[in-house]
Length: 240
View 1 (cartoon, helix red, strand yellow):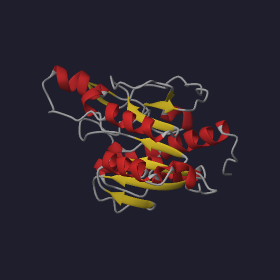
View 2 (cartoon, helix red, strand yellow; view 1 turned 90 degrees about the vertical axis):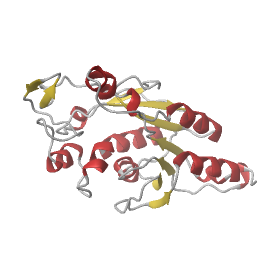
View 3 (cartoon, rainbow, N blue to C red; view 1 turned 30 degrees about the vertical axis):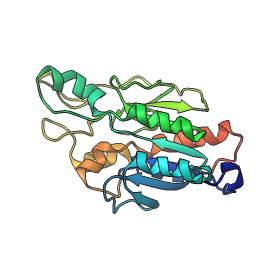
C-alpha cells in the first residue's frame, strides 16, 4: 500500500463523484473548476468525465486501500436512500405503495470518514440520517423546480445561503388533491408531474432525456455552488 503522503496531488482540484448517475453533480463541480471522476453501478453513456462502472463503496474501499484516494481533493456522494425520502415516508407508505429500498447513507459516511478527506453527502428531503449542514432549493438559482436537497459537509463548512420564499405550489397531485403552481416535480410520471422537457428546463440539464437519470439528478447549479464554496473555504482560486 502506498502511503497517501507519497502521492503527489494534482494542481487542479479533483472530486470523486460517487453514485454519479447522469452527471448532475459532476457537471456542477466541473464548472467550479474541478477535474471529475465518476463512479456508478450502471452504464452511464452520457457521463463525459473519467468514469468507473461498479459498486461505489467497493470502489471507494479500493481507493482507500491502495492510497489512490490521496489524488482527490473532495469526495461527493449521493447514496441511495429512497427508504427515507419524503415521498416514501409520506404518501407512498401511508397508502401501501412501493417496495423495499436501500439505505446506504451510514456505510457511505463510514468510508468517507476513513478517507481523511473533506466530503459531501447529498440527500433529498425526508428522514435520511444526515446532518443538514446545507440546504439548497431551485428558487435560489432561478430554476423551475424547487428540488430541495440537503447536504452533510464533512471536514469543512460554509455559510448557508438565504432561502427565498416559494412563489406557489409544485404542480401535481398531493394526497389525492391536484394543485397548479409555478414549479414542476422531477419524479415519477403522470398525475400532473413534469414532462421530460420540463424536467430538463427545471434542473438546467440538457444532455439526457432519460427520465430515470433526470429524476435521480441534482441541478448542476447546486454542485457548482458547493464546489465554489469549498474552494473559497480552502483559500483556493475559484474558476471564473
